[in-house]
Every structure is written in C-alpha cells, then in structure tokens.
Image (cartoon, rainbow, N blue to C red; front, side):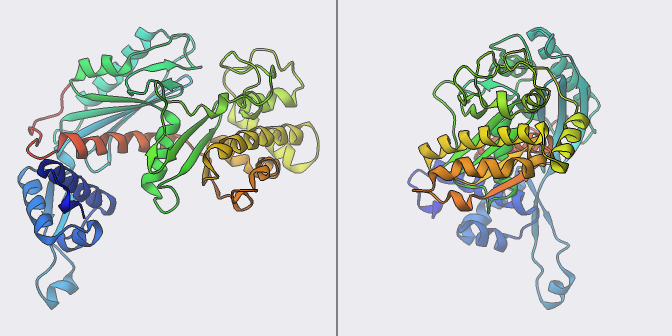
Length: 413
C-alpha cells in the first residue's frame, strides 16, 4: 500500500492525490468509501481529509441518506469545493479557437468560440486572440469563481516533449509557437500545450478506465489523421516532440501529397480531403484542399453505402491505409485496443472490412482477429475533456500538494 512508501513527503503527496482523484471520479464519497476505493488506512484517510477540509479544497455534506439516518449515524459525504480553483482549456483547430473555463469539480463556468482564418494568422495574432478570449471569460466569470491556476491547450499539430510549444501544425504557416511561455507570463500560471490526440486519449482513459487504461491507441480520423498512444499506463511521447504522428507514417512511397508537404502519408489516403480527392479522380499530387464541409462528406458516404462505385472504392482505400498503419504499429508494440475518433469514426462501416483485412497479417502473434475497436464520431468534447483533466490532475498533484493550499481570492487576469 502507498502508506508504506519510504519518504513521508512523497507518501502524503501521493495519498492526497489518490483521495482527490477518488472523490473526483465518484463526486461524493464518505471516508469509509474512500478507504474502500483507495486501499488507504482509515487513519490516513481521516488525517488527509481533515487537512483538505481545513484548506478549503473539499467540503462536507451532512445530508446523507435518510434511510441510513434512521438506522444510525449517517455517513458524511465529502465533495470537491468548486470555488477553490478555475482551470482554462483552449482548443486550437483549423479556423477555430474554443476556450472554456471550468471550476475545480470540472463544471463549465464560461465558454467562447471564435472563428479565425488560422492559415493566414501569424504567431502574434494567434496568441493575441487566445489571450483576448481568456481575458473576456475571466472578466465575466461568476463572483464566486476560484483563482485561475492552470491552462491546458490542445492543438492540431506537433508539440514539444516539454508541452510548452507547438512545433508545427498544418493549420498555420508559423512554426515553434511558444504558447506556453506567452500564456504563463501573462496569467502567472502553469500551461500545458499538447497534441489534441493525446488529449483525446487522456479523456478516454478518465471516462472509460475499463477499456482504456494501460495500453491503447486513440486515432483521430478527420481533416487530419493523428494518434494518442498509451503504453504501460503512461502517454507515449518522443524524446523531443509529442511524436505518435500516425497520420504521417509512410503508406505509399512517393505517393499522394499530404498537407504536411510530404508524399505517401497515411493521411493523404485516409483523411476526409483525401477521400474526396480520390472520388473526384483528381491529381493526387495536387495541393490538398483546406477544410471539408461535413454535409458533403456525409453525402458521399451515403452514396458509398448505397452502391458500388468510386465513392465506395475511396473509402476502401482509406480503410487500407489505416489498416496498414495499425499493422506497422502492432508489429512494434503488439495489438492494443483502438478508439477511432472524429468524422471518420462515423463511416467506420465503410472502412472496417478493408482495415481488418490489412491488419490480419499480424495474427501470427497477436489477437488482431478480435481487435477491439470503438468509435466516437465527435472529437471536440473529448479534446476539451482531456485538456480539463490535464489541468485538474495538475492541481491535484502539484498545486494542492501538502502544505501548498492556494490563497482564496477572486479570479483575475
């Protein structure tokens, strides 16, 4: 048990994190429930929860269950204090910035969308727009809102391993954008800048731990193709970058042109723009279109379902590209559960046969015949939830460490 770890400070910090995480997962728990969920001793739970209450991080609800009250002393439920902190999430996608403020319980307190032509925007314009949106939301936050203590940003692109900058993205011409430093200096809080697919994986791991815990891949099938990968219970990142660029793995040498500027990437065959390009029989070396209308994509999917033809063939080619990438991935790490996310997940019925036919080549040492694939057609809620959990878990682990309770003050820029 964690009570037995050698260093007392590490023990207290880890035990506090366990208790906060357990309450966050179940919303309301008695001390007895916390003991059952965490495996910590009653005395440890009592001491830590008493300290957390004194610091204003959690609170007591003495209402209890009326039936329990009649039988004896009611259990006292403990819950997170929503007013102790605010976290901000920022989603940066093609031509869209979405900023949301959450309280410490994970409830939305303010939200704003802004359309911006990202392909024409400079670094300064992107940072200024995000900052102005945050300023506006903070200024109009409820009076009882807690202080802003962390910002998480999910971006469509490659980020550095330190989660502080966007190194490259197909949605903007500028590179090495130091969002983390800029926002941290402006708001005086920690900032995490991460690949949006990693945030999708974090959200799935939190919301569905039965299926996504130790080893799994979350693959985004949209205008771009990306992947968030968990191995041995930890997110996989590269030595220098977020890595896991599934969409830019080589599928066909010197093949179709991808948005990244290279040829033959999986994305150049499996993304929405690639599917439409194949259907129209356009030159595969031509510059990819930027942005695909959802209605148009759904229309060609319906045609592919209804009859054989170029539409069905294009989706089959996309399934082959994704299957090829998964086969290569599984050759390195063994088969793992897969979550398909985004518009492409909504047309999995058109991809599945060819996808599974390709990856079946790894069946000699892995259970790919029964590969578990689940689909989530809307990626945006998952990106935001992953960002939110990144910030809230940062508070639980670092900000609310033993003896480091936040000062109670109104939220301000």
